[in-house]
Length: 183
Image (cartoon, rainbow, N blue to C red; front, side):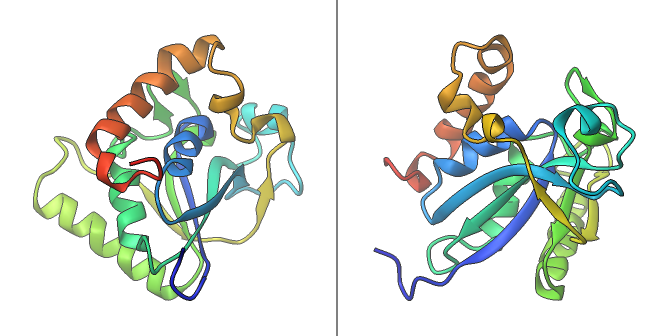
């Protein structure tokens, strides 16, 4: 049972949204996760349009969470551990602006936490290369198509899920075992 049942929202882009979706769904304190698009100019884009790289949108997850159980900073700590924030417009073999690393903040408090965390990671030389994560105000968010929601759980045998998503989620589960819903 959660404290007062408060709900806040985080919008994050770390490459393919299927990887982030699978990780955040397993995290205690997360109420829901929705895959979608943000950061671009096209109104109500389709997956195909976003994949073209011409909409300006990134694949994102919108995470609704209970801040009494998991903080925004905790969500960002996990965010920086499950993708590479040092590669511009790419995650592994996924290349294009739609796969960029980005934090779309909902208020000045989130902006401050994001900028502070990036500064700490840089100061502590956590990554070999500079962090290129974009920190921008969320202008508009568009939900992804129904078949993208909870994609990994619904498609575990799909090739990308087996080769890319499953190893990332295994690493995430090992590192954050004490924070998982089923822990």
